[in-house]
Image (cartoon, rainbow, N blue to C red; front, side):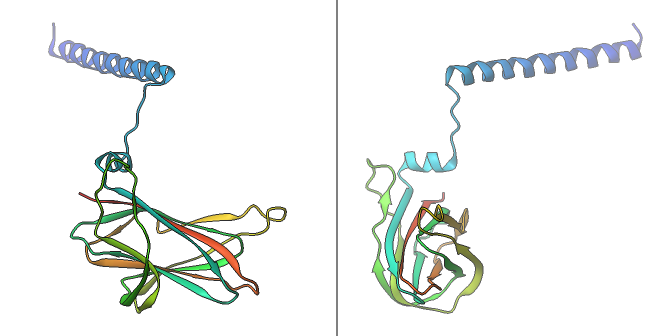
Length: 195
């Protein structure tokens, strides 16, 4: 057999083998999907299992023209990954996000809940509102929509999704009610401690 024919035969053999293995993997995946056995494990899921994923939330009434500032302060020596900051509102609001504000007075600390109810691990993170915060860099501006159910569905604003807060850094969320009447809002942080 000539070298050209031998090379063609080897290439055909390798291509055929790769195709057969790929088709086998696809068939196995399709069978498992049909049987309900495909499991996708995300980093968040793994962190929940390890007891290093957390949530914290609070509800506020914000008077007309007033603001509420909420600081997320990573005091640990580890990175903290924020999956999302969820803001729900009855009315229209302005939302500003600042990096690394100065914290003069922390204010009202929020409870932080471990998403693995068997774990007692608590991160070195503080979430608080009503304190005295200044400076920082304005890094994000957005709005949240809300309304009465028969006129509007209401809204959830994701702010700072998938943000990594390095050790000894913070972010602050400032929510302003520009309307002429008070409104209710709720804020929820979903986050986990990095490796």
